[in-house]
Length: 179
Image 1: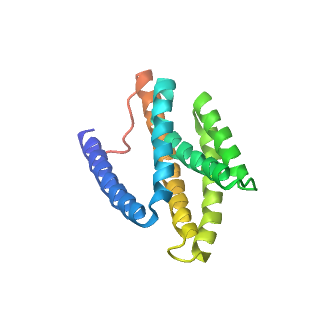
Image 2: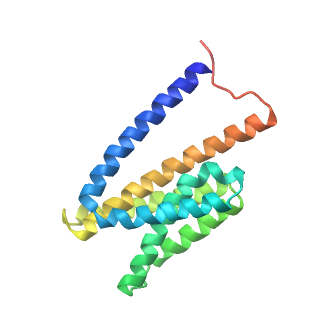
């Protein structure tokens, strides 16, 4: 058990360092394109933290990241006075996040992960076609990073929820086979 916690701590520190480096590099390149969804993520995370039940708390980072991304897209529609097929992104995010908040579990995570993977593929195609340094290139990079973060955070949130349920029942947490 001590080894597992130590490994988990090392993994957390490594993930934090990698996240800081990647976030800094993306921020330097993307500028305001990162600032808006990041501010939205902090706002969504703070609101969710104040309102959600304890059983949903492990999903807060995933909810915050996707909420920030959804607010950024909504802000873009409002500022550009454009409503197109990309509005489906906001609808899917809003529906998936609402479902996750009301009934946290595997099903809403599967919906959101599937959406994020499909949207990642579309964004990646557009990113590779965009001119380096263009506003579209910078914005798409942020979308790609947020989509990867959302998937990783949802998987981590599910694992934490599973651990909480197991430990709340009083069953021992399994660490796998011991040598």
